[in-house]
Length: 283
Ligand SMILES: [Fe+2]
Image (cartoon, rainbow, N blue to C red; front, side):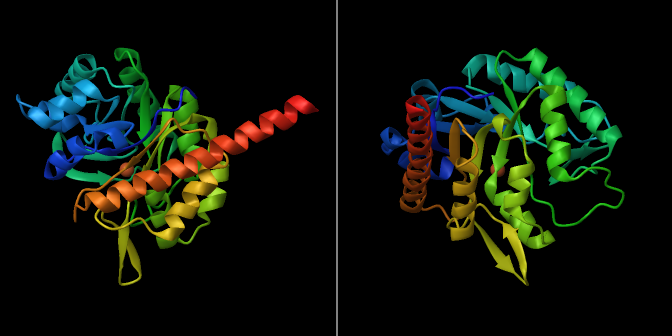
């Protein structure tokens, strides 16, 4: 799944669209929420400018890959229209369900990791992939409770979807860190169990702590442990892009600082790979 490195960018938000346009030269790419494109006829001047001048990736919210019901035909059609129109490098959605009995619940719910659900998700991802001209990625979500009767560990479940549906991984490092803290597992061991050759994109964001529970807010500074986990990932994987997600408490200065820090981590990873290749060529 590896390809050319694109770099570091952020998710497009109307609240900071003027700042994004003003600092566009400091961003290598922009992630745009697919749903935001098809709920309005007019995408607006700032977003149109971004879509036309920067590499973009599309990120969907409501494919509901983990639902028992089939993919919603209207949602699928609208998503594919946006992919055709705006030509993203790739598009993505979550390993979750957000629809029950045809009703959108407006929440990303974790999927029970059974072999039946695995088969269903693989079939849906294959359908999405085969209908689109660009790669499709699945993203790991935060999960605040455990299902009973899980048949597979999460890394094994994700790896199986990646392999059997032949898609890429959007690894949300903050989601992984939050889950590891709230559920008491080793985030680094989780990373090491993943098929890291499939990591195409990474999400970074900040959260906060309430009553000993870490909450994924996308509205706070990115914490040190999340940066350290990103370093661990980038020592092992070759993501094409990192997106800084910010959905609240907008602070363009803080976001741009995070963009620069993520870029440094990618550069350190490139230097390590270059040094290893040089050492290999000498032996
Ligand atoms: Fe994310």
